[in-house]
Image 1 (cartoon, rainbow, N blue to C red):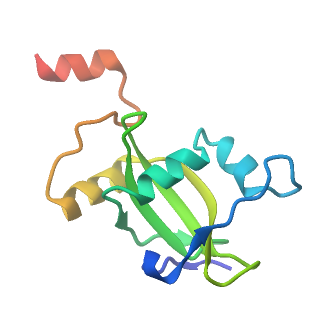
Image 2: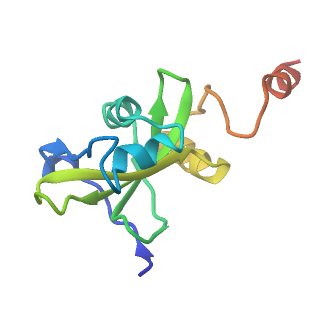
Length: 129
């Protein structure tokens, strides 16, 4: 069932709910396929992330925020854990698409100086000259 994402309030949650990587249906295994790991998720949650509204299927919450370790912006989707209601369960994530990144810049009131999806180092260099 599709629905709109809700606003995430971290005060409602006490922990992140990660499965073991080799467990059937593992959320960690799934997110790793998108080149996002548990450290990146924690880094985003500890930094300047924003809520974004998007259509979701298996998640409740959608956020966009920086993973400064790799100088990239990530879009992350979460759900309330079925194991315990005060745990936040990562569902999936990806390097932010241009509209998601533009929304972060609009809300934060500043330009993202890190890597932008779809732009090569050569393209970034040409823009500066």
